Length: 120
Image (cartoon, rainbow, N blue to C red; front, side, top):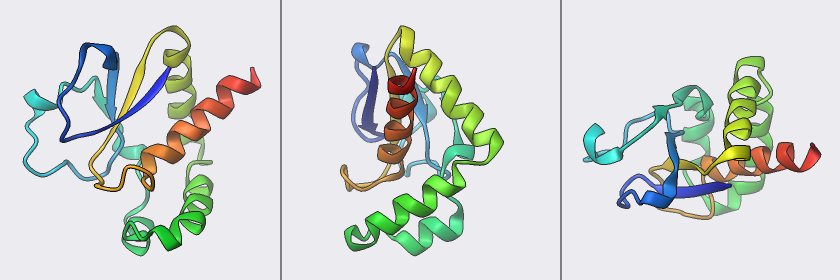
């Protein structure tokens, strides 16, 4: 199972393994409060793409397209496969800081993991 959660929401027992997928650490969140399994900043969008997107919903479609291209890099594909493997046997929660819960990089990663799980 793949879940999404904002970094500012309190962790729950149902979260399973928690992975921060942002390049920048969320403001005001301590490492103790975050209860992370790992910080996968290498899965985050490039700085250029992140700044271009600016969480503008009108740019969402193009952001997804560009971000998926970035995620095709071998090292990033390997991380996504590892997350998919973990999701087969337990819950994986992708943590992000964006205010917009519908248009953020964690949504794209979740979609790719679910596609990988469905293809098997």
